[in-house]
Image 1 (cartoon, helix red, strand yellow):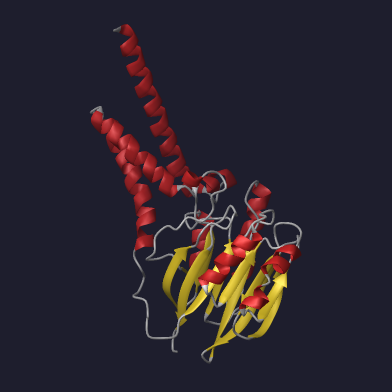
Image 2 (tube, rainbow, N blue to C red):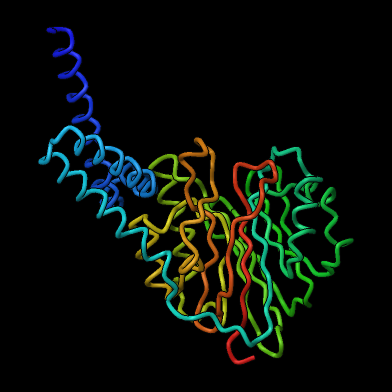
Length: 318
């Protein structure tokens, strides 16, 4: 009898600790601009929601209504950040010609080059944006043979090689270096149905320390510091090493007057580096006015720690 009572107390003590930890993580994620560690907490809103629902069920079964109210509030707080992704800002425009973008962080050390090539071919994309590409990756993919007659590429031996392939003529392009480390971003202008569209491909550094977090933020800011840097319409595709729930990312996106292409299509997690259950959406395609998102989905596994993003879009006025 005493043993059962002790186990019961131990169980509820552990459950309370989990609830307090969940509250700390949920609320701490809003304060990421104060400390880089808190910014890391902002990315796991889906996991926090799942944990809150589980704890709510436990407390309800145990008739611990005070604690149940706490975790119900945490569930609603996280749900409020997730739900907008399932509602589009506007109905997609389906009359204009459609174009497809394939975005993938292939992972430099990933040996499954042929598998990645098959997935790219099956996507039938008009544009292919690749991150973490070495020269060997570009040689093995041989996307020229798949009809991608135009490309801008900066292959590297580290994890910051980058490339953009196009089935449409690239009118002009440039390489931007967004940090003192000389990490590249690609800017290319393409004529689509008489309208010039600017495509930007970027890979920011992972925020593993306070310094790296500042460098990541500086890379993002450098893309949009000048309102006239890129003419409309334009889009940025890349691995931002941040989710849209990061306080910094959210403020930057608003100031840049860009829209998250996931709106209406859900969370779409892409990075599974920690564990599949902890996957988070850090690969983004962000669009300006003039770009209409028609469909967005996560592509199949290519052997990388990231899943590809496949985006169908049209250009307003065509």
